[in-house]
Image 1 (cartoon, helix red, strand yellow):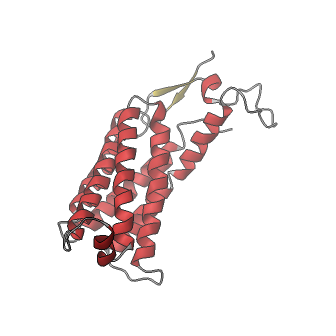
Image 2 (cartoon, helix red, strand yellow):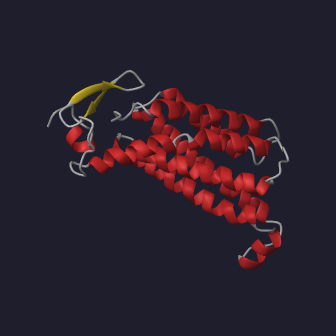
Image 3 (cartoon, helix red, strand yellow):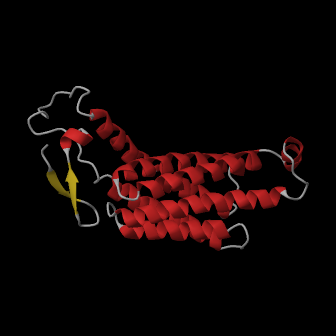
Length: 222
């Protein structure tokens, strides 16, 4: 198997095996489309995952809009659901890009924990408190506590993903630090006042921009 050496965003050489990741070799990339063989689909999936990372800074912008209390025509509910949807796309893409790194187990755990927290947040944010109490064994007044717990669970998942990024040695470790700081600020945002939630959104924006920019260098382009 031929091995090519490329440099990652962290400055370390990245060993890429074209037969495994499906990268096009010079003999094959003559302007024609490659057939689906030699795990070409893995390379294609990682290419789409790189593009999906740009959903993270977009989600951070919408989340920052909510923390500032800006009232727009769509409404806070629509903005919040859109921010959560983009965040789900981004964390799935991030976990997919880290699937071949040494921190893949931590990235998978972070993805599952984040999805668990997001699943709890959707009905709590979209339904009135009376409907939540009527459909679940909850006492009136504890819905706020459950919402705070869902936010903390989601923040814990982002914290695990940030640690996976920091230890992966594939991208800039500073992006992992920013992602962990954003997770801490967002988790504390349920019990603290401004400007902690907005600072968390800004940290998430910085981490998302860094990951989306450097993530494009993980896999060679066709």
